[in-house]
Structure formats: C-alpha cells, structure tokens
Length: 101
Image (cartoon, rainbow, N blue to C red):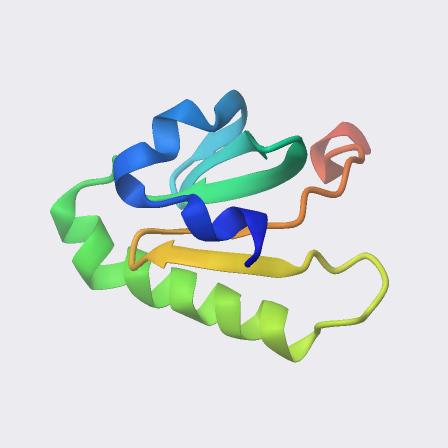
C-alpha cells in the first residue's frame, strides 16, 4: 500500500503543511503524509462553472501528460488522483520561472 492511498478529499486538511501557489487554474499545496512530502493540485475552491467547463478537463489532461512523461528527468511523478478536482504529485524543489525575468 502506498502512503498516499490514505489521502482522500475528506481528510486533505490534516496533510496540508503549506501553500506553494495559488492561481486561476488551481491551488498547489505542500503536503506531508507519514513523513513523505508531495504536492497537491486542487481546484475545489474554484467556481462550479469553472470546474465543470474547464478545470476538470485541464486536470485530467495534466494527469495524462504526467503519465506519458513518466521516467523523464525533471518531470514530477503522479502519485494519486484524489478525485475530479485534485491530484497528488511529486514535489520537485526549484526556482519558479517567474524569478528569471
């Protein structure tokens, strides 16, 4: 059993340890589950209109891309899809591109 299997929508809050970023396409949180650090992308706080029209389609597309690029250096591993509004993936520390202007 993978450590992230126990994470569900109902218990997400107990695993969140910080906010990495907030934006139009969702929020990214740093989470810790039994000492393993990962990132959570979540669109649950977006409007129902956004989630149904764009958000869920974009999230599923992003998950497919992670699966297709699995094993490539610098590409985060997809750990678990929580539901249609969020997924957990590998946290790769680095500097945001916005800092390189």
